Image 1 (cartoon, rainbow, N blue to C red):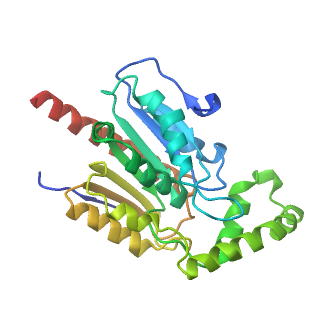
Image 2: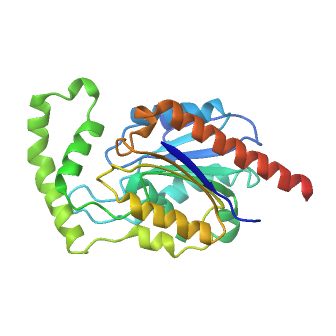
Length: 274
């Protein structure tokens, strides 16, 4: 495992929200991957709560379940119904995003197109897990992942697997075909066009991830560093797509805590100089 920092020179579901009645409390939006559950993200949620964040968990469906088209309207709904009603109450409160895989990164990409300059400045940091990158084209990756992340562990048996296949195989074969023919939107290329993504960025991924391209994630990180962003990578030789907070729980939580402390400390220094 390794950690690297590249520093430049100079309407919400109440069950998914933990409110803290402090107007100075930072806010974090944990954005899950497709077929995710809030239960699976509980370790990440716990980490931010221990850091006294107002924590919101949102699991959007950015891609249509059967047509496999990207649904850009989900970003507008998120902004109007969930995001702005929360953050606009006190624009001085720092906002963090912690997103998972293509689904989470796609929401951030589309949200960034919708926010105005002052709204973007409120977002101080973003953490990407297993993203941004191009999509894998092997449908088996999606069949397996959707099963192990979409069903409770107690239900993951042979019978449930056989029941899962008739629905998952056609869906993800079509998905992969569209990817191979380059008929799908590429959120990664769209993110690269932004020069004003949050200054502080943290990336989690493992080099054996077959659902994304780790070298392309590294290329994205380097591109952000060249744009003057403060970027950090926490990587592992072996892992599980979007499962690092379970497989490497201690390292993952510690990297998140250090990142948050660094962002908040440097922000305090800047404010003190003003």
